[in-house]
Length: 220
Image 1 (cartoon, one colour):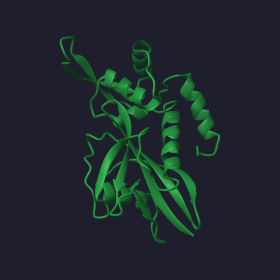
Image 2: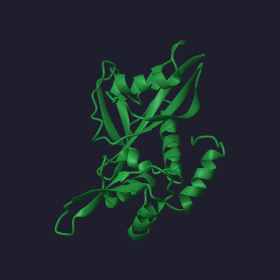
Image 3: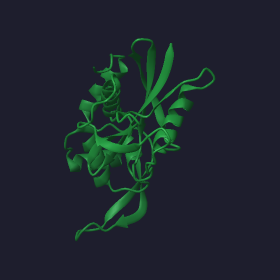
Image 4: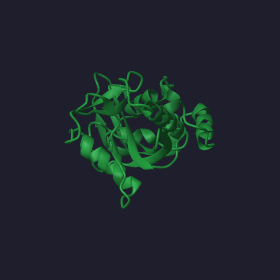
């Protein structure tokens, strides 16, 4: 049986959650992917796909799910979250073009790849229940307003600014950088850095996390 690896890379640009796709010589848009060899680890193949197809190096990934690919293959999907500003795209020899697409306005994908994107999004939203995932999509220093905007893009809805700020600071998942940034005519905004730890946006995401961790099938 042939085993391939597909990588769903997400970012937030201009307030919108986007997915990385590559266009091959045949004109179809695809997730970065690669076939495994007997002496290669899945993690190595996933990293090579991101590097050789899109020029992405040193990004963190996690294994997402294994999907059947008829008639005689399976695909092991990986999930990656990056700040596009820190990781410029550079098409490799196997790609004519690489670019970001809004997650809800994708071109036609190869059979099964839409399920990878959908399950990646579900996992990403569930992770907001226990991990400060937004920091992977932000520059090294950021304002709390920028962090909130990323969470709103991830969840597809607005959050209450006062509650968000209170909960982030109480969770201890950010540290003050000691620097500020002027934004318009108002008071300069304080800049923060990631401090790790656990953070849940609200109860809705905690329920989603329980559903994902229960081992339910990925969305079709």
